[in-house]
Image (cartoon, rainbow, N blue to C red; front, side):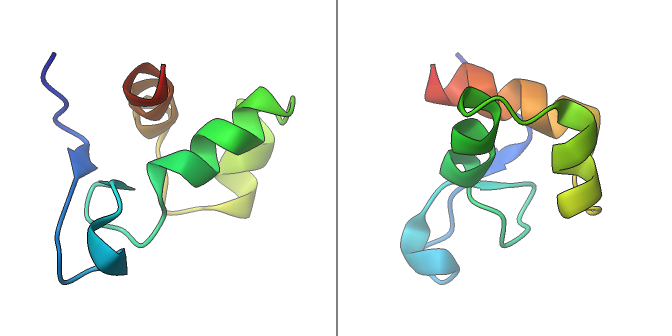
Length: 62
């Protein structure tokens, strides 16, 4: 499966998978969603994210 919005850069965040090169780990987004936080609240907490970032993060984590 190919992910266009997930980036892994060894020089950023220790190589942790992040959303679009932002310093927002995929795992953070996945945990917030799994704990019941709505997409709207995630986007408010992380305004640099876009709705598609959340969808792809959940696919990646799944």
